[in-house]
Image (tube, rainbow, N blue to C red; front, top):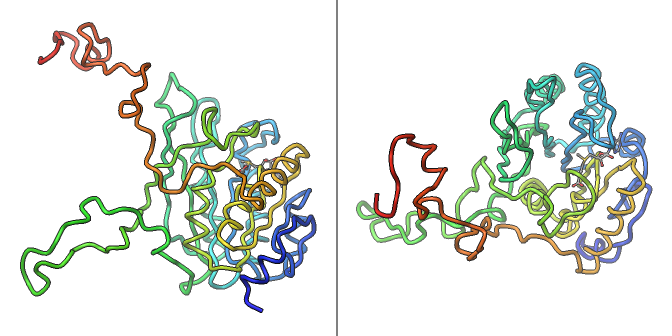
Length: 321
Ligand SMILES: C[S@@+](CC[C@H](N)C(=O)[O-])C[C@H]1O[C@@H](n2cnc3c(N)ncnc32)[C@H](O)[C@@H]1O
């Protein structure tokens, strides 16, 4: 039987892992789940672990202890990863009395000591977050992508994005007159502009830091094939499983907090029924001016614009100046 057919017959949410299943939400600690996963059986591990910044679901630990705990989980994930597999850790900063420590740099030695090879450090840029007064407000986090070997799955075509100048042609040489860029679109690069899930996002739940589904869809499509297993050891609201099953992959994750386990199950069920509302992959970022939002005042259209005065203190601004 083809994997796709098998998968379509098995869209039930299980709470125990077995390779014969397709969708698993494990209600408990990720290390307990990982113990049940055979060696080299998963194609992708993608997660956003607790950042150790004192969110409601974590106890703030000394950074060294936090890194030791992460190392245990990472080591187990690597054991379960297929030789062609990928592992993506999505992180921000650890904040210590106002000073930041980028967690990706702190975690890198753990991955490299396990023999993994880094392929990209993807910058995920978004517009909304905390406003800082003693440093610039943080508007990006990173996804560090490692592979287990040099022979890894990487599908570029399903995640290509529109070319800037799709009509551009070679103007001389043997290819003169032919289109110069790939008609399937361009490589999305390593800087991804995708809105984060804040209060006005269609996917927002009560969880404080959900992945947008479109962020994980891009990773799933690039690093796995239909029927492959994708794991998220810190599942939260189930986003990784949702993005995986949406594209015919199998998804498994662990979550310890009962209300998030429930939310994950609910959202996955809605996805199975085709009812989960999500922001579509590839939709351009909202442009308030084009949308005619009356709350948007273009600063240079106002004679007394404080924003323009900030740029040049002694200048006078008005229309046409
Ligand atoms: C940053 S959130 C992940 C959110 C997720 N990416 C989403 O889209 O909803 C981390 C999650 O890991 C859970 N968690 C913390 N420690 C855990 C553990 N040892 N095993 C499983 N889940 C854990 C937390 O309750 C929290 O929901």
